Amino acid sequence: MTAITSNNGHIPVRVIARRLTLLPLVMIMFFTVSGGAYGLEDLVGYSGPGMALLLILLTPIIWSLPTALMVAELSTAMPVQGGYYAWVKKALGPFWGFQEGWWSWVTSFVDMAIYPVLFADYLSTLLVQQFGIHALENELIHWLVTLVVIWVFTAINIRGSKGVGDSSNWFGLFILAPFAVMSAIGIFRLIQNPVNVWEPFIPPDSTFLGAFGVGLFVVMWNYLGWDGVSTVSEEIDNPRRNYPRALALTIPLVTLAYFLPVLAGLAVAADWSGWTAGYFPEVAAQIGGQWLGAWLAIGGLVSAVGLFNALLLSISRLPFVMAEDGYLPKAITKMHPKFETPWVAIIVCATIYSFFTLSAFASLVVVDVIVYSAALLLEFAALIAFRIKYPKMKRPYRVPGGWIGIFLITILPVGVLGLAVVSTIQEEGIGALYLSIAAIATGPILYPILKKFIKKDQPDVEVPIEEE
Image 1: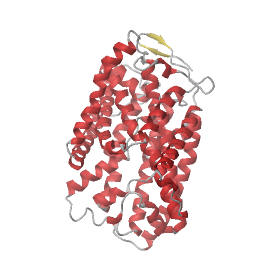
Image 2 (image 1 turned 180 degrees about the vertical axis):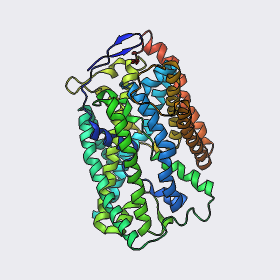
Image 3 (image 1 turned 90 degrees about the vertical axis):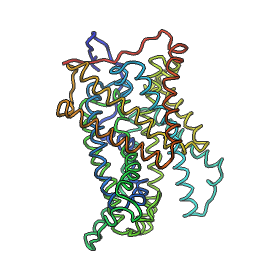
Image 4 (image 1 turned 90 degrees about the horizontal axis):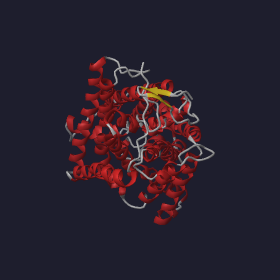
């Protein structure tokens, strides 16, 4: 691996065996963002068929594409371990870098605990419906199943990013295949017997803005995570070439994976008001029979573990790079002697997620929209700061349009985030805002404490910059 030079001299980047080629990278990115159309059912029920279809197509333009363009420029300019943490640290300073890493890691405590719980819930429902087995309704057995999920995929992650990529390929194929069959049959029927799948455009008892705001909150979370894989940039084969390519492939893949099943489902399942979370297997059964419904239900299990597997890969690098900078104990920086993975950081994350599956922390998920927003805004601020501070930085990919382009890709996500925050407060009450502020405040509070008692005089790891 060739050393990357900075404007201060030659600084070698840590040598890590690169294992992720383009296709595994696309599938890991697919799982850090999506995992299939599961969870979109509420969008139809809340906002109406027409608004749901509009939001699925509009959100990638106003949300995913701007974020992806920002990520493409920064990830190709600085393909370093830690990704967005390193970008913000270099552009805005150590304090803001710590906030970026800490906020992103803290939100994962809730998010990552959800997927093993969802797996156990889906498995319990499947066992009851198909075999009359109620064992997983026991809380202890249910929790033990979540632990099996967590630690099986912890072991896969410890073995390296290639294992995560290979398993993501198979998971992605298994999830996309039944949705593809469902979509093909449903759209064929729609062509044979045309119906206005977009009617009613919004629920009769809702306003346009009301349906748009509520739906945006649902669909936005199904398009989050475009920056996630940047944390393992040093484990990607030729990241300056493959990261932008993966983004260009994954955005349309995710959009089609959402749009086509919803379109096909609305062509057959006319009672749009009955669309709630977990409804897709029933829709698939109406379209293709019980076998297709069962396939989609099993796909829900695979989606949950696929999401956990891919996200653990990206999230576990945050405590690793923060420990390298001295903000967390140095033991977290230990690399596996055989697999060259940050195995202690992975185990620390898995232990935290095991604890969080015990309680009803899922009720705090609403806080994530605001905390995640704060971290994402720091990334856009870093993009702007780099354009000002390092105009000659080598940028294999550059956001087009100069400063007008930078303004447009920044203002669109800011507007979307603003709407989402307002919608969150309207739906959940002002308490969600207080909890979010408290979660955000933990970063500034912990920073001086960790700096004094753990970091002490340790210097930050230098983030290299290559100039043209």
